[in-house]
Length: 213
Image (cartoon, rainbow, N blue to C red; front, side):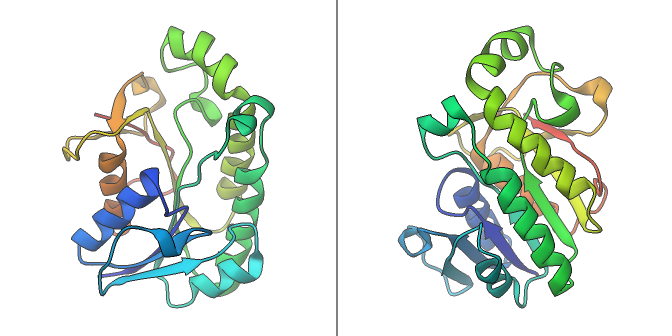
């Protein structure tokens, strides 16, 4: 069993990742500014209040950790409209901290349409939803991906399709081959379970799989 740090742990994919990690028997450190309010209690769960943009906060949370799962999200409509630098700045901090602490395994969540998956999902997504709703945010996710890919870490970048609040099915499809990329949906619970599976599974090391069901 591993000790895993989940950054962006208070809701969404991060919260589902905590649940999956505990169910798998791992020790989980849940890192977020609102970590104390996470509605879970478990002897193997440690809630850490911290800022993903603070090097000292992140370094402190990394001590004793075997792997890191980064799952950050936009918090406001303003960020969707005007863009954000959260993803790139937080990733820059995290990579520096992990390299200084000697921790290698990083599993990071971006999304379908990030990096070289842009324009390869569905026409509706690529030419309507993405430019109107997501392009500014994803421009920063592109920078975050580039920071990770240029690092010395053992990274996997996971790009989920359209997210739902459905139950975990365990029937995800992880598609690392660019020729297989397509639109699809996946529950946040399935994403969380997949992320936890990657702690020990190195078959997707230094790859950027699209994740759908």
